[in-house]
Each structure stands twice: as C-alpha cells, then as structure tokens.
Image (cartoon, rainbow, N blue to C red; front, side, top):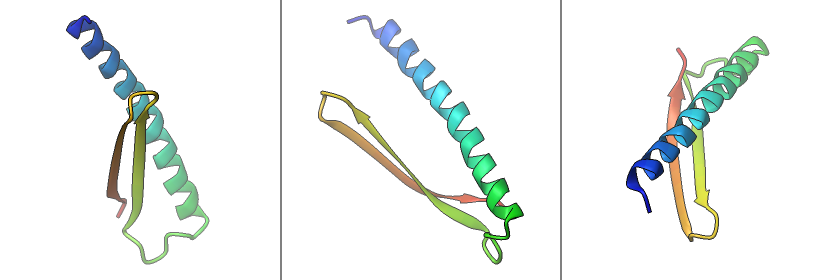
Length: 68
C-alpha cells in the first residue's frame, strides 16, 4: 500500500463529495424556502452515511444546517 496514493485518493473523494453535497443541500434549502416550507425554522437536520463496501466499515454523521 502506498500511503501517499491513499491520502490523495481519499482527499479527491471527499472533495468531490463535499462540492456535490453542498450544491444539493443549498438547492434543496432554497427550493424549500421559495415554497414556504421553512416558515419559522432556522435550521434543518441532516445526516450522512458512509459505507466502505466489503470492508465492514460504516460512518454516520448527524448535524444541523442553519440558514437564518
């Protein structure tokens, strides 16, 4: 195993995920706001589940995304 290759590959994956996830989240919140679905709210709950196929490894992150 090459640690540098692994590190770069993981960083590439996380960067791609981060960019795409941010766009998706922002679009969804803007659309919900325009539709009046966020009245009286200042945040939404969000969660991410990551699984490494075949490695019996899972990671879950839950948090709030604020918008006002």
